[in-house]
Image 1: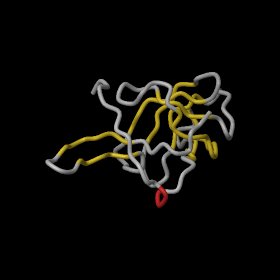
Image 2: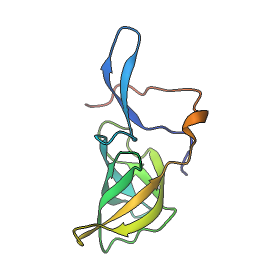
Image 3: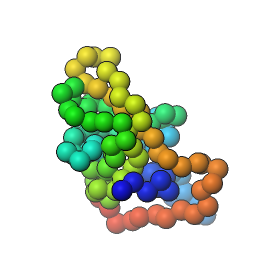
Image 4: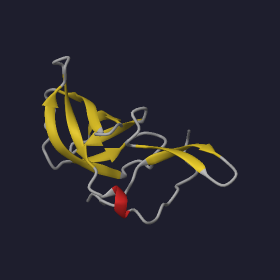
Length: 119
């Protein structure tokens, strides 16, 4: 089940007392994902409205399906959000899905950094 308390990001630079983290809301954020119970391969693209791209047009995904991490920089199988809306991609070959992250940025009170993953 999807945990709505996860804010996804990667530490990209460390300073003496702070660190720079690229979150799912950064337009340069990308990660391999799987969608739904069938584990449909796709690509999560970050930005102000994170979305899942490169979903095969014939894939059976549905609003509410959980989107799971499938890349090497995020723990495999970590639930990242749910499919909020499904749209045809501009190329008419793939579909795209809006990602609902399920939390309020103003209510985040703690951060956990997972280390030791491949970069």
